[in-house]
Length: 131
Image (cartoon, rainbow, N blue to C red; front, side):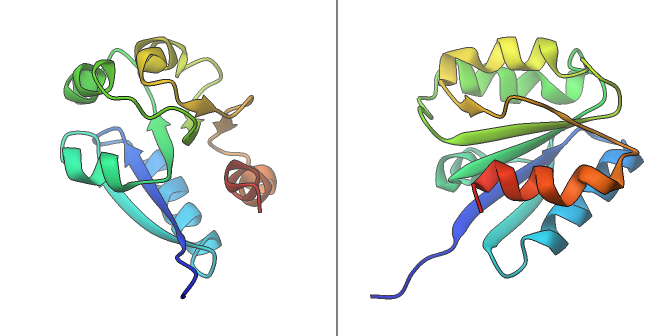
């Protein structure tokens, strides 16, 4: 039986260039370790959310309308134990989104990756998957 790669869904707030750059870094870092799919928050589909084993959310403003549909969806989904991490433009930017995602029971990484700190990006990404 062939080992399947972990499926990682990277969801980035619409129109946030620094976060889109981190999403590209995530794809590059995990190219041999996971199957990574990146989507903007307004474009992600329910089957993509359900198919993923882990998530990375790129957040500039957790109150942005880009997140409205995902907040609604995750209120009714049980994703218990699936890993999730947040990469942000500023410390604390994901607090509101983390609270909104609590009903989904994601296993959230203890620290966020703050944009502009490339020295820790690779280690944060690998820690998210436990590799």
